[in-house]
Image (cartoon, rainbow, N blue to C red; front, side, top):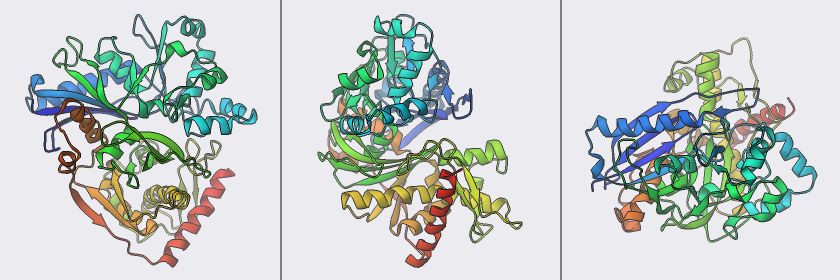
Length: 495
C-alpha cells in the first residue's frame, strides 16, 4: 500500500490529505462549513454538517489524483479539540449542535466552580484551568439545558465525544466509541496522572460515566471503516488519532523533551514537550498529554491564544477590508509600522497567560491618519504579541531557554508575520516545507501503528526546512513595542 490518509477536522472547515512514504502530500481537498452564533459569545457547529464535509473531502482527495482506495494503508484523524458533541447511541443523531471550543456560554458555570474552591483540584488532576474553553462544563450545560437529556444520559442512551470520537463513530458505522489520550486530556474530566476518567470530577460536574468513550493511545487501531463509507475500502484501519495541537507537535518531529512548536491557525497554540516530567504552571499555562515517539502518552506544556487567524477572518467577513487572508501581507507592507495602533482580538476573552473570559476586543492608538494598512498590520502583529506572551512565561517557568521556534499552520506562510515573530521573540523562526503538520502528525501516528513507517529515523527523513527567519531589531526596540502591547491588553481587560 502506497499512502496514508489524514482527516484534519478544523474549526472552520475539514481537510483530507493523502501522504506518500516520503511524507509528501500527493492530494488534498478542503470544505468550509457554517459557523453558528446563537447569541453573543456563543459558537456552535452542526455535527451532521461536519460529517458531510469530511465525506466530501475524503472522496475528493481520492478522485482528484485518481487514487485507488485500496492503496490507502490506514487513516489518521486530527481534530479541533474541546468541541463537544452528544448524540443518541442507537440512532446516531446529535441531540444538539456541537458546542465549539471558542464558545463562552459556560463562563458562569466556571465562575461558580472557582468560587466553590475547585480551581486547585481541577488543575492538579487535569493540568487545566477551570475555563469555558474545555469540554466538561459544555457537557454539563447540555445535560442541564436539553430537555430530558440527563435522564437519557444516565440510562446509557447518550454518547459524548470530541470531534474525533464523532468521526470514529461515523466512520465505523457506530461500532466504536473511542478517543485518544490527547483529546481526553482536554475535557476537564480526565485525570492525566492516572490516565483515566476521574470519578470525583465527574461527580462535581454531574456527568454520568456511561456517556464517556474508551481512551486509547494515539498510535493504535481504533476500528475499521464500515461498508460504503466515504468511498473507502471496508475494513481499512483507523490507526491514528490526536488533538490538532498534539498532532502538530508530533508532525514537527518534536518527539523529545525540550522541543517546541507553535501553530498559527484559527487560534495559536505553543506546545513544549516535557517528556515524562509532569509539571503544573503557576502562570496560566496548561499541562496536557502529548505523544512520544511511539505514539504513547507523554506530557507537554501548552499556551493557548483563542483568536489568531480568526482575527484575519474578521477583517475579511465583518469589516470587509480584505477579500482573502493572503492579501494581508501586501497591505501590511504598505506602511513601515502600525503608527502606534494596537489591536487586542479578545473576541471571546483572552487565553494564556491571562485566562480572562470577560476581556473584549480592543483597538487603540487610532488617529486621523490611521488607515486600512495600519489596522491590517496591527492584526498580524497582535498574533505575534500573543505568542510572545506565552513564550516568555513558558521559558521562565521551565527554565528552558528558547533557541528557535518551529512553526506551522496557515498564517506561518505570511513572511511579514514570521519576521515580526522572530523580532519579538529574539530567536530564529523555522518554517518547514510542509506546513500542514497537524495532518502530517495524524498520518505519522497512523503509519506507525500499521508499520508504514517503522522508526523515528524514518519519520525524521520526512521533515525538511523551507525557510528560517532571524531577528532584525534591537532589544530596546523590542521592549518598547511590547510595552505598547501590554498597555493595550490592560485596556481590553477593563473594557
